[in-house]
Image 1 (cartoon, rainbow, N blue to C red):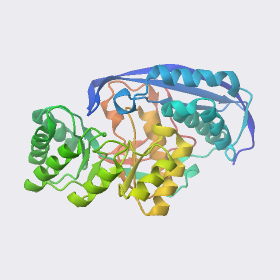
Image 2 (image 1 turned 45 degrees about the horizontal axis):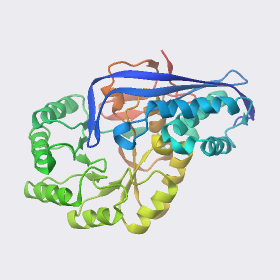
Image 3 (image 1 turned 90 degrees about the horizontal axis):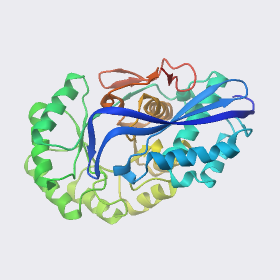
Image 4 (image 1 turned 90 degrees about the vertical axis):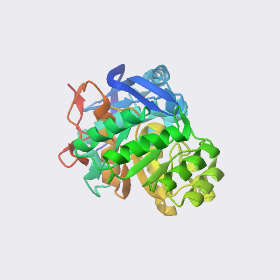
Length: 363
């Protein structure tokens, strides 16, 4: 591991990347990735990059909030000492000074910090996170829309060689509309495992109606991801019992304390860890709670570029034990302002080639 050194600079800029089309979830759609790029330099000249990807329809965070939280850190972080052992102390300080109010800003700061430190040490991030593995299988998402759109998207996903399909449900049109979309997907991709993601947008009644419809059509999802409101843990418990299918908690878990509540309420069998929800340090703690409790792991994200998605890939592959991966959002971006990042063949992501840090730099 590296010896302690001071932070020389912290630079923060908006990162606006157009999408091919709006990315729709139950809470709304985003037409552009309005993210934030962080550049952190250490006194030895090592530079690390981080990305904040706030997603207003997901949790209400905005680019302006992320920028403000990161810019506020410029006043105190320069000159601070840090290394790969005590990095969490600096991350905790960022949280106390305002990062707790914007998880994506917390994440971007920690990404840039770990990237700089691991580059300085000549250590790839996947090794830093445990070195358990270097590959993952990702799904690809069908966003909200019509049955015809869903079928077209599913064909395109299979044409890429991606096997698993994630489908956003709970949008406008209700459960019958979602069922029609899922039938259209089955028609063109009958052997694809389906992850059905509600982004906390379904009521208990709508969820029950959709389960009945799926059972009547002999559609067995691989995973029901956060169908109900994030605080409705009793409902999630009932959904799992009534459907007999795996349920994943996403919006319900933004901290290790949240994960412990999910365990206590038996509200999920899988936890979707997104670094953007609360940062890398908290994600490590959430993963520990899940493993101790026998829950499965999923890695996901917001509308992120190859930079943040590669960090998540290093996190999940290096930690090991992640059954589900949803690291597809670079495919939705109409531009890539970076060099490097994970390699992908069909749906198989590899980080084995990354020699230091996360390996991504501005183009």
